[in-house]
Image 1 (cartoon, helix red, strand yellow):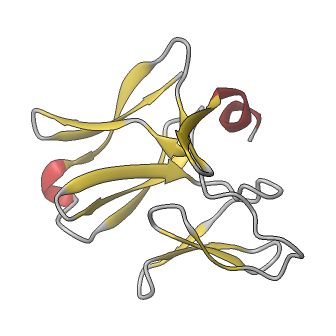
Image 2 (cartoon, rainbow, N blue to C red):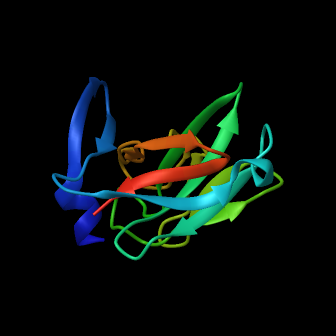
Image 3 (cartoon, rainbow, N blue to C red):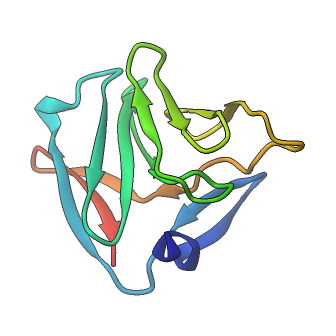
Length: 126
């Protein structure tokens, strides 16, 4: 998705990138009670599509598009993997590459700024 690419900035840690819009608003994507430890939820706020999870008490949100050709990812709940239908690439719910059939591994998925406020899980998006 073009918005994902336009918002991506290096975070300074390897291939990890974080989507940081120049101007954006917080969008509620789940109620905190609906995202217990280990749960993963897909969200679509119009300009950004992704997945949010709570692992070891920490929230993490990643892009819902593959970092190779930007095909839309699907969630394999049983394996806790995000699957790309285009080239059999799989990512952890934290965005790291698990397996791929390409000549070189694609970059990790961009992270999305996420927070919990007043019982809501929110992401920052344009």
